[in-house]
Amino acid sequence: MSRGEDWGMATDQNCYNETEPISEEGYWGSMTDVRMMQIAEAAIQELRTRGLKVQILNITQLSDYRKEAHPSIYRRQWVPLTEEQLSDPRRYADCVHWCLPGVPDVWNELLYAYFFNY
Image (tube, rainbow, N blue to C red; front, side):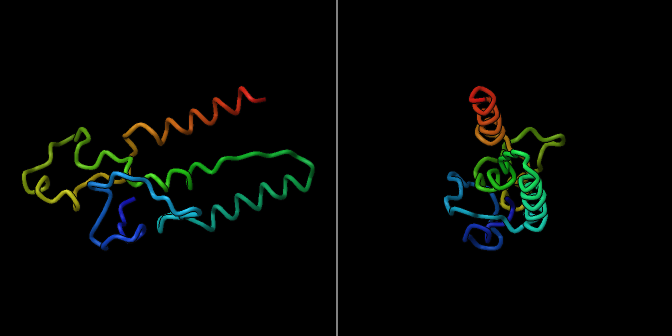
C-alpha cells in the first residue's frame, strides 16, 4: 500500500493521509503476485474436479483494498522519528503494517461467521 499510483494518486503519494478504502471491484495492487493467486485458484479448481468441496476467502486481495488502514507515521516507533522524518511523512510513513481496526478484524469476523454457519 505504499504506491499511490495504484489508486490514481501521484507516484510520490503513499498511504499517508488516506481515509477511504479502494472501492474498485477486482482491484489488485501492483505488489500483489497475481500469478501466485492464479496458481492457488488452479490448485483449488483441481481439487474440485476430484470431488472435494473447497472454499477459500482471498484475504490478500481483500486486504489490498485497505490503503487507509495503516498506522502511517503514528505507530509506535522502535526509534523515534527525527524532526526531518516527521516533516516528510510521505517518505517515512509505515504503509506495510495494518494497525487500524478493520483488516485483521474482518478476517476474524468472516472466519467466525463461517464456523457458525456450518
